[in-house]
Image (cartoon, rainbow, N blue to C red; front, side, top):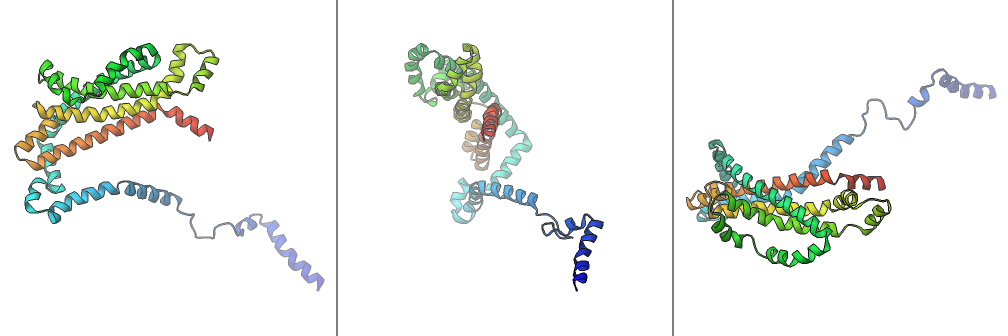
Length: 304
């Protein structure tokens, strides 16, 4: 009996020695034959799609209400002044086919980019100087506060009287409206730099220029870009209002001209274009902010 047990237990061992991979193949942790690994990639895709749908749920609900509300909830007289979404999209398509909407977008973008660019250069430059030199701040601050609290549209008649109804007045009013968000956020960004970073940089022997280049400006970039995003939105909104007063091209002109001509779907098409344009500008500025703030992400990842 003893001899039989010994031979029975030794047989698997001999088989394992003859086939070294047999133990691995029979491991209880290995997947069974004919099965596939867990669909991790499919789950990630589903999670991304679900997150996108959730984030856009409010917009989709608004668009659905715009489409169905005038038809089923509003009276016929109200539908004249609030057409469904599909009628607005059809009007936009006709304007696009005729090349009308492209010309108005080009005119508005040209004015907005010119005014915004001038405000960006002036606001960042002056903001850095004011934040770096305290005496300059004490001299200019009262004047800047006076103009900052004066609405840009309140000065539109002044710009029109001084510069006429041409491009100069519109670009100037856009630059005025976009200047103060950039200026104030630049000043705030420089003044809120961590003093420990400045002391550490000075202890390493950095001169004023290198300190400003390597410490002050990179630390102030997020706050500066907050002002730039605000200025980008303001430049579009103020320009649309200026084009409504006196212009022969532009989205503001399209909206007010369609309203006066009782082309209501065309009017909403212009409004929708302004919204999409502002959204695109904001996405572009956010992408630029991420690009210029990559060092923060790298530092955070290294620290974690």
